[in-house]
Every structure is written in structure tokens, then in C-alpha cells.
Image 1 (cartoon, rainbow, N blue to C red):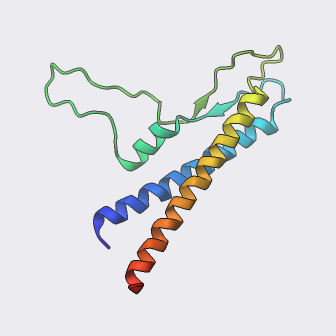
Image 2 (cartoon, helix red, strand yellow):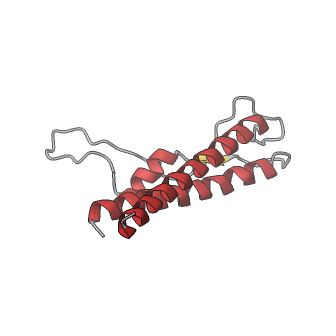
Length: 128
């Protein structure tokens, strides 16, 4: 299998894995919406995906260049609430439900694209 095609499939596989992890994180937020002191968590999907694929910050070739520092943007963090509750819970149910729905839709889209790519490869191999 050509390296570029393998890398292309790897992007889909990594994206599906991260979407699944993000979905679990968002589901946990929704499940704990009434838990006092619970802190909602989320991740910057694009940063985490870039880190997983090895697309890190720009390389610095001279000591006079500014380093592009990405602190912990590629790790899950805590969501900053718009309206924090009095009991310390930072889950905003409407926001979490919207993020969960969007994440699920993007997961389905990635899965459909991967299936079409594999179906196209199968068709090409069979010579149909």
C-alpha cells in the first residue's frame, strides 16, 4: 500500500478515535450536570489531532526566532463556563448537548468518508 494512502487512512482512524474520546468526555459532562463541584472537560480537537499526527509547532532554526509554544492545547482541559452555577458545577447543559450533537455528526461524517474511500479502493482492486 502506498505510504500516502496509508497516511490518509491513518488520519481517518485517528480522527475517529479522538471523536470517540471527545464523545465520552462530553457524555460525562452531561451525566454530571447536577453534580456539585463538577468541572466540565473538553479538548481542542484540531490541536489534539495535529499532535497525534505529528504536525507540531513550527520548527525554530535560529536562536533569534520566536518559538511557537503550544502549552497544553493538545491535552483535554476544563471548559470555561459562561454562567457558572453557585454550587461550583461548570456544566452548561445546552452547550454540552450542542457540542455532543456536533461531535456525533462529525464522527458519522468521518466514518462515511472512510467507508467510501475503502469502497473505492475495493472497486479499483476488483477492476469493476
